[in-house]
Length: 115
Image (cartoon, rainbow, N blue to C red):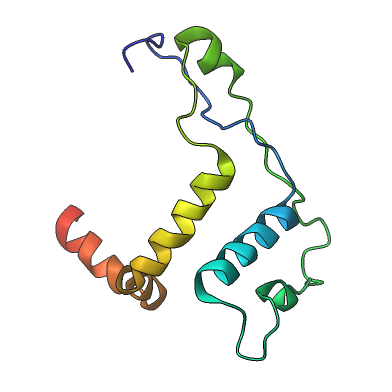
């Protein structure tokens, strides 16, 4: 905010572009490392299924952060792999919040606090 140009738009990304399936497999491996394998001994990666309802399914998402790097000197403090592990751990440590999102309960909190 201090270094950017007034009215400019900057994309923020880590430069670690990879396909979606690789990300899902990485999440599965992190969960296996933290929680152990599934009860039957198989890895969580065995749960991955492909659906037919999205024939043009996104294969990847990419963000070009060269402008913010060039204009402000910004660089990410976290790489994708360690950041993903921290994210997985956060969700596991905040199961109550996850359940509120799944049930829609958090919407009431938002309405109460933000109208």
